[in-house]
Length: 101
Image 1 (cartoon, helix red, strand yellow):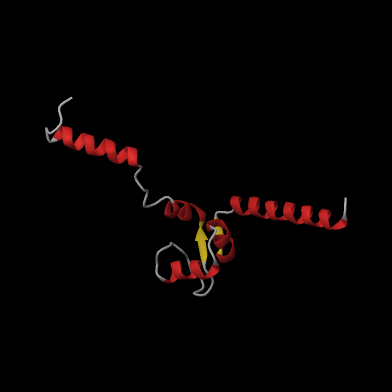
Image 2 (cartoon, rainbow, N blue to C red; image 1 turned 60 degrees about the vertical axis):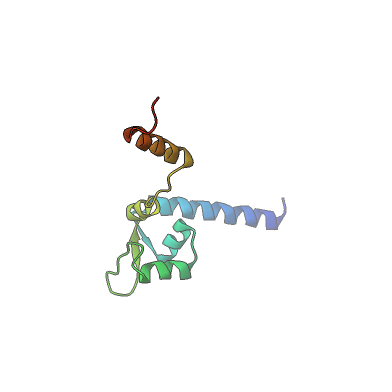
């Protein structure tokens, strides 16, 4: 095995270990949150400055995020599937007496 391949594999292992450690933490710093959400730092700054995403500033400077709140935020604003819309429409029409089965 070449030296560059070994270094590449070690870096890959190091990255995976770092990601696993991050998933064990309840509170994430700014950089960890950007990685967790898979967004750029500038986009995360925009989300925090607009008050779109829940965050904490204990000393008024550094930003911290609670992972459980991030998960809730990520799962908000669910999009309805086409099948669910069709079912809702059929139920609505049945309630209004327009379709008889």
